[in-house]
Image (cartoon, rainbow, N blue to C red; front, side):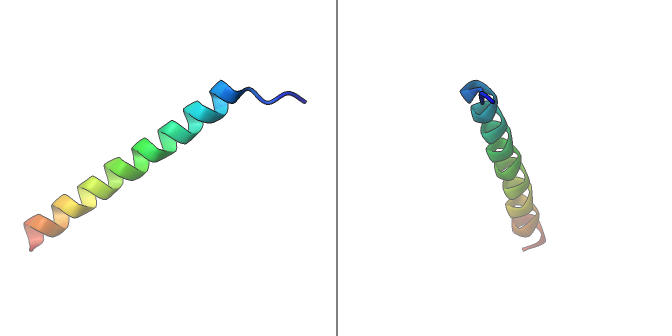
Length: 34
């Protein structure tokens, strides 16, 4: 079985992007609710 590095890199990038997006939204909510 051969694992494609590009696929793994893409998945990792997507996960990081989602975490950053959710984290930013959470921080914004906390700042607004204050």
